Image 1 (spheres, rainbow, N blue to C red):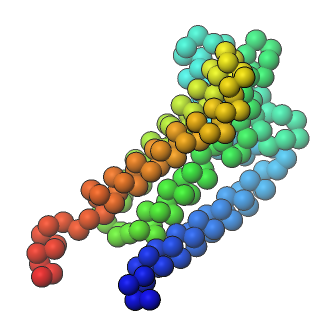
Image 2: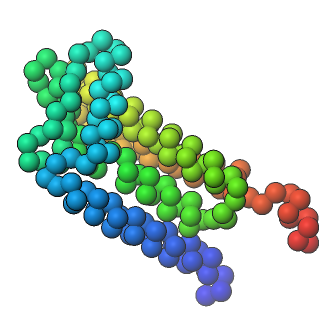
Length: 180
């Protein structure tokens, strides 16, 4: 049992942080129900702003009595953004891993905001790509949304975790030598 203690401790910390984060997130979403929460609305607005840079005159609207916003183009709703699409749950997974893995170093001060920013940009790219798929290849929308683009955003999270574990969470060589 002693040899598994670090792994068990990591898993317990990860799941506690993940569950607490999701309980807070659930309370946040419930607070705004039946309207979309501000994070979902903001992510939709940011995605639409980027789409406008590509020459599409899109607008953002809330569904009446649903916690969803949608991007409209030429009088048609092209892509709906539900609360699960705002990226906050992915942030929770990312943070749960970092804080469960530790150690809590100075590098975490800059790595956490950088990681959250990268995940946010990847999520915006995911929504924008779903917009294009929905507009030009609607038959592929389910596959792209459910599998490909979900894998896309979690790949970014995984790469950030690898970066953290391999480069930033390691004690420095000087620290290793001083403890021997």
